[in-house]
Length: 224
Image 1 (spheres, rainbow, N blue to C red):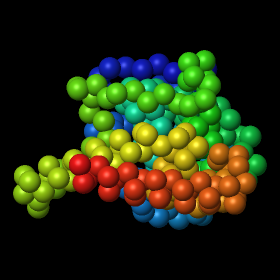
Image 2: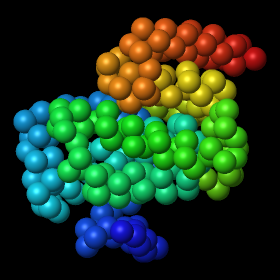
Image 3: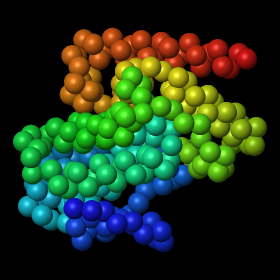
Image 4: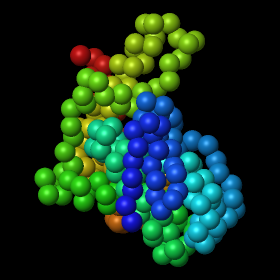
């Protein structure tokens, strides 16, 4: 199966399914927020497994931005993140029938996304995922403008956001991925352990160390 992409509007086609491409410029600052009725999610998965296109599109609409955000935080490239998100959901469409436990859809989904990140960059550097400098014209992950803030407050919020992203980029790969999955995607320890393929104690330790490192580096940046 191949995915075909059009320039305007931003849509991609997957086995006859037309799905709107998401932009990081319209990023949800807290993509892990909100609740979804588990029974409704199971219903969509069940129907999607049977080939129901509408249910697959609903899964995409709920989870695509979260996956996009996770991948972006790992590779720091909007273009790469969009490409890998699309590849992830093409694989979801292909492989959904192999998912045995529908309750584990989200960890399964992020495991696919994570695999694509490392597959893409394995030939370039086996030890770590390379972090690219954002292009000046790159929209990146941006918070929606808050009209209640004055220009100085908006500038400070943007500056802090840039600092946090730079700190995340500087984390070792094993800390970066668990920090993003925990602090930004708000997944449970068990879900994260399932995604990254490490033991629960190891994941808890890595998340704790990552949070300490982020806190320390953010304080350092703000004092400079």
